[in-house]
Structure formats: structure tokens, C-alpha cells
Image 1: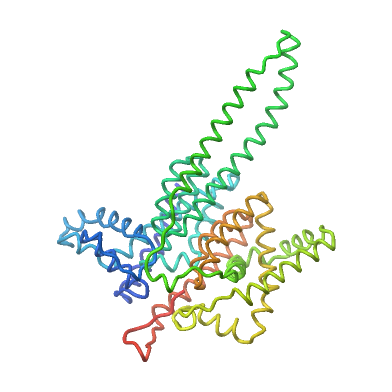
Image 2: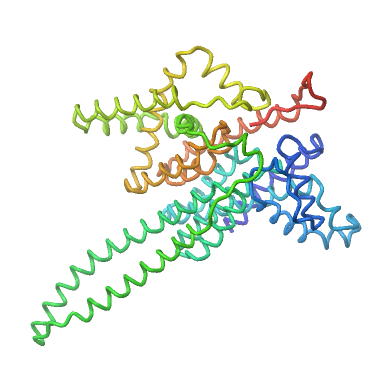
Length: 464
């Protein structure tokens, strides 16, 4: 019942907002001018056609074909569409992400239930609803972008792994890479977390079994005089077999190579270490009611001052030096960022980071504190190796990206929030209220505050 109720709640904002967006912005906008014509080529059966400006694989278009195929009989029966191609309109193609957003909310519900089994249904529902409202995920639900499909596939892969269905997880992971090539990193991360979980489970099992076995062995030897180790060997064979399964699954996860296509000159791999700094601050701000609390501040101070002063001084100095070097040598001002005033990062870059030459350096302590808060929050319930794997996966996805786009942060943000053990309802309600406010603002600006460029015809709109 909880999942059905959640799907109904998410549909309550997906359906009316989708209708409103399609009425006010009926034509393809921004990246849709590439994605929608490409999907329509697939609807015609022209699978050999490819727009060189598209930088992602065709996974979204395959999903769109399945979506259109499921709708076509009903539309044809009602005489609302006379051919399959007629179904591939802008509105129908956009609705793919609406359906995926509902599916994604249910997946989030299942993940929260699995990771936090002591939560009751009401709290799980609250967490899933708030996560579904996350502004970067919410906004692109209503446009024909790859983001919602990518997030849904990666989270579905992770859920299957949590349920120890590793082959199915590998299959979903392969398709996630077909949606967006950088998802290969999250495939490897999920495989890594699967190995970590199995190792931890076996470690606990071995400790308990060893203690039990010693007791049983002494009792059996006393009664029969036997010293046979056949039982131990049998248990070892079982563990080795289980290890082989996850190893095979990991290999399956890792066997799908990433590839890139289209507009390579604009998306060339560039060492952009400052992305990690931006991600930390954006993520902390997106979780402000959970990070900016007295409890979190006290915990951070206690964590820091438990360390020896020389070690603390060395670690903080190293973090600050790395941050300063990152913003000085590895902060990329992409031409799109500097020229396209339709994106919010354009204004943050010009009005904040580049307002004065010193600002980018003065923000380094803020970035450092943000990462400290994130690592501390994750470290409460996850092992150090898990946190390290998460950090490396996030870096592998973000550092090569030359363009600052907050939507690239969505998947690592979800992994972060899902593994933060914050169960305070007030924090989640405040976070949800914050998301609703941001969503209303960005959608109102997008729909009702259009503007024009002098050098190019057509209506322009503000977007993430």
C-alpha cells in the first residue's frame, strides 16, 4: 500500500506540471532540440541516423520506443493517432520521464526500506517523497533529457545489488551505461559496495562460526576422540562459492566499456578538480536542515579534537592546500559557462566566484568544511572503505567534466543522502519545504519569465 500511495502522491505533481509545461513550452527547448528529433528518427525505424551533437548513448530513445509502443494501441483505438510516428510528439516523449519519475520514487522507497529497516512506513514515505522532490531531479522530469532515466537505472541497479540479485543488477547496470556512459563508474561502485557488504557479512559470520566451532569441536573430540575437520572444510567451500558469485558479478559489471559520441570538442575530458569542491557545497546546501544543526556542529568539533593536534593541523593544512591548488590550477571556465546566460551556474560564476579575484580562494575553507561534514555524516554508519569508494567514484564522474552543471551531481547526491542516518522528521520536512520552494521558483521563472537574445531569434528561458 505504501508504494501505491507514494506513486499516487508523485503523480499528483508530475501530471499537472507536465500538462502546464507542454502547453506553455510546446516546442523542443535547449538540449531537446537534439534529443527529440533523434528519438523521432528511431520512431521511423531509422536506427542508422545519429546527430553528431548528441553526447550520450541511445538508451533513452530505446526506453521511449517501449513507452510509445505501450501507448500506441490505446491511442490508435481512440483514433488519437493514425501512425506510430504520430505518437512520437514532444509531449509524449517528455512523458517518458514523468513515468520514470514515478518509478524512481518507488525505487527510492525500496532502497530506504532496505537501508533503514527500523523506519516505519510513514517515515519511509516521507524520505522517498522528499528525495523525489530534489530540485535537479524534479525539474528535468518535465523535459526530454537523459537525467531522470539515468538516475532511475542507477538506483534500480543499486536496489538489485542490495537485494543480492547480482546478475540482475549487472544487467540493469549495462543498460544504465547505454543511457549515459559515465554510469560505468556507478556500475563499478555498486559492484564494489556489493563486495564490501559480502565481506562484512562473512567477517561477522566467521567470527560467530569460529567461536561456535571451537566449542563444538572440543565437545565432539571429548565424546568420540575424533579430530576431523570435514565440517570446517565444507563451510569454507560454501564461502568460496559465494565469493565466486560476487566476483563474477563484479566482472560482469565491469565488462561494459564506456564510450563517448558527439560534440567531443565541447566535452573533452579536462582535469577539473574544483568540481569536487562545488559538489560538496551544493550537496551540503541541498541538505542544509541536516548539516546546519547544533548536533552536527558539536559532532564535528568532537571528531576533530579527538585527533592529536599535530595530526589535525597537518590534515587541515593539507586539505586547504589541495583546495587552493584545485581552484587555482584546475578550475575550468568552459566557454558554454561564460556565454550561456540561460543557466543558473552562469550567474553564480559571474556574481559570486568571479566577483573578486580573492573569492574563489576564500571559499576553499567553506568547501573543506562541507566535505568534513559529508564525510562525518557518512562515517557514522558506513565503513571507511565504503566512504573512500564513494569519494573516488564521485571524483571519477565529476573531475573529467569541464562544464559546471548541477545536474551532474544528482546521482552522487542521492547516494550521499540515502546513506546519511538522519531520522529526524523535522529535518526532512524542512528539507522538503526547501525543495518545494526552489522547485516553484525555478519552474515559475522557466515558464513565465522568458527573454530574447538580440543575436538569435526565438524565446529563451532560464534553466538549471
